[in-house]
Amino acid sequence: MTWQLQDAKNRFSEVVNLALSDGPQTITRHGRAAVVIVAAGQYARESGREKLSAVLRECPVKGWKISRDKDTGRTLNFE
Image (cartoon, rainbow, N blue to C red; front, side, top):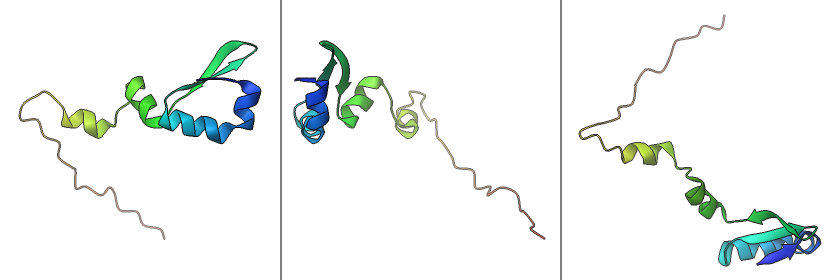
């Protein structure tokens, strides 16, 4: 759906709800598409952003494991 900027400002909650339920909402300024409001989940999928943990879990190298370093760092003395 396409919204004029003034209408989108006045009905922002509705624009956001429609982006979540129906898909991207285009907002125009001076008759031209200016921005698109999309649900965060859709943006993450389409922008290629993934959590590092998900990428590492899908590593194609067989037998590759991640181990957590138990080192808690250095000891600091506040005297």
